[in-house]
Image 1 (tube, rainbow, N blue to C red):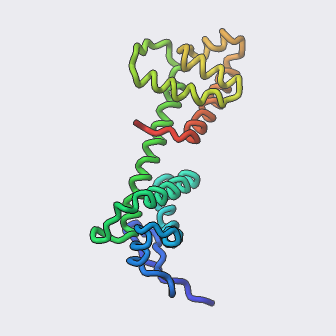
Image 2 (cartoon, one colour; image 1 turned 30 degrees about the vertical axis):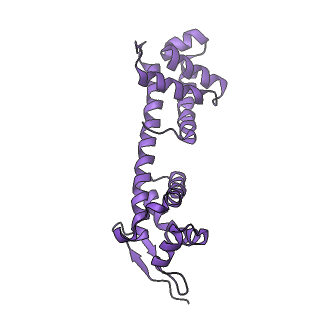
Image 3 (tube, rainbow, N blue to C red; image 1 turned 45 degrees about the vertical axis):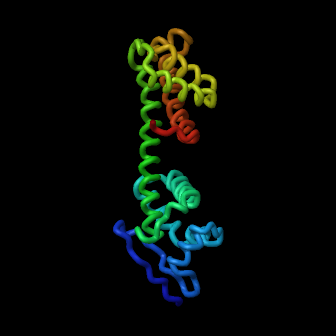
Length: 206
C-alpha cells in the first residue's frame, strides 16, 4: 500500500497538503501566481482548495455556502494577486486570511437574509405599523419585492399583503376568503422559499 502524503496542520487543525515530489515549492508558486501564470493558479487551488473549503464548511455548516466561499476566495486572490507580499507571510497564510474575510461576509449575508424574511413574517403577526419614510424600510421592501415574483401565486399574494399592506394573517384570510389555516400554510411556505430566493440572489448586509 502506498504511504499517505505527509500533511501540515494549521492552527484550526485543517489539513494542508504538503508539496509532492516534482511539484513547485511554495515560493515558486507564489512568484508564478503573482505573475499571472494560470498553471500556478491551478496548482495553488489544488494545494489549498481543500483547506479553504474545510475552513468555510466548519464556520458555515453548509456545503453549498462553503463551495461558494471557496470559489470566491480563489477568485478574489487571483484578482488581487498583486497585493500579495511574500515578505509578510506565506501564500497559504494569505489565502487563509482572505478565507476568513469571505466567511465573515457570508455570515453577514446570512444575517441580512434572515432579517428580511423576519421582517416579512412580523408583518403577518403584528398590526399595521407606520414606518414613515425610513430608508431602510424602503430598501427592505424593494429587496423583498424583487424576489416575491419568483414565488407561486398564492404564496406571493399572502406575503405581498403582509409585507406591503401590513395585514395580519386573520385580515388576509378575511380579504381573500381563504381559511386561516390555508393563509398560515402559504405564509410559512412562502417565507421559506423567499429565504432561498434571497440567498440565491446573493443579498448582502449593508
